[in-house]
Length: 383
Image 1 (cartoon, helix red, strand yellow):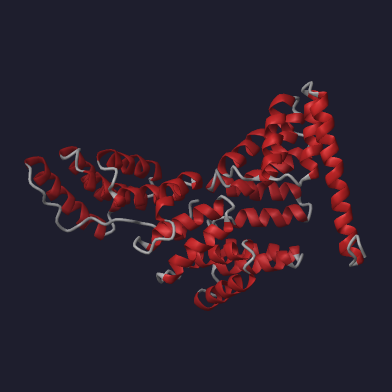
Image 2: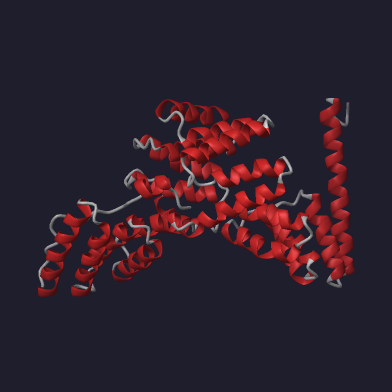
């Protein structure tokens, strides 16, 4: 998940003023590291990286030096380089927490939420780690559709004094998605007080209008957010979703594409871009998008269901069965999944299993109709 606020906030590790361990190569490396520190402090990050790389060549087994090089590469936007360097530091010293911090931070900046969550999981709920670690872990859980976990980590960042608009935005959304309406409102109020008119503030305004089904108003709010910061993560996706709801499909596709240019692994945009292709009868074009969505968020039920649908329409019944079984395992109450599974099983030459899946789909449809009737009538079956 690349974003401006991550670039500024999530930089773990600084070059210490004295890295002067004994050894001829380390003395040379320490001198170069001190120069790199001065260059970084002056904002000359590229020169600092080049200088620190020379220091690394002088002392290739100095794990702590690699930690700082990883931090500088992350600061410069070279997230792949930061990941490689942090891993090299961990290979030398697996207990070096600074290396693990920088690895997780670079992974979330690179948009690999799953890897970041795995790397930083050991720090969940701990109060002895930098606030940036809680931000990265919270954002990773949010991207993986784990809102309660995301809110818990972002709350720790808030308690540590973080007031970045992007973090408050993520916290408000996570609390809302976790069903904490009061907590979400508190985060929105804090954001409105600390950063009125910011892209984050406009995004939450759009969310509120969307919830009220005022899609034109929500579209206008998301456009204001983009006018403030056209790189705000998720803003083009949110705009695209409003355009999709208003049936402006071509414009929606362009908005999703803009999001994916900046965040190629952003599962919601991958999913809805694929839905547009499916709606147009282009199942094969939808396949890589849906495969990317479920790779980014393995718990995305609708992603697995529509991947099965796309494979079925593309004549790939066998692999459609696998995707639909995954969707059914994640949500055993979705009649659409079982109906599609029945079709896929039939095409795959498994008639008995197809009948059983169709029976389950029919049973779920009946139960859902009964639940709807009870909601409309206000009566229970016994009443």
